[in-house]
Length: 141
Image 1 (cartoon, rainbow, N blue to C red):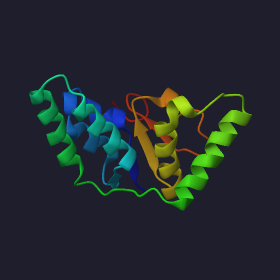
Image 2: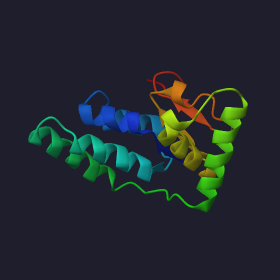
Image 3: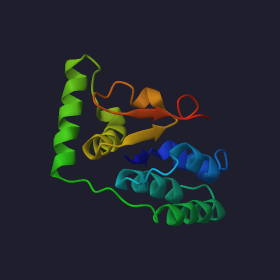
């Protein structure tokens, strides 16, 4: 099995709220993957930084993350995404559009049969078929 790590974890690593060693302690020997959605979210955060120094810090953190294996988004990911969005709508959970990036990340985890590690479990708790690990509870921190 492997672990796809949500953007929320990487943001906290970059800010120093979580040590990289803590992430490694939670994931153990499992392969850790990165989503192109996370790259986009982190790049956005770097580009809108309030200072050049903060921008450089964020870009350096992103460069370190790019060493992780990257999961692709393909036709199967799109099929899973569409099914999840429709299931949530049918369950009366409204529009998925305010959380579109979260659903793409969840779709990748489901597609590859891996866990999703996040600090924001509420953003993913209603996604059918997702093996969710919340930082701070069942993640051991």
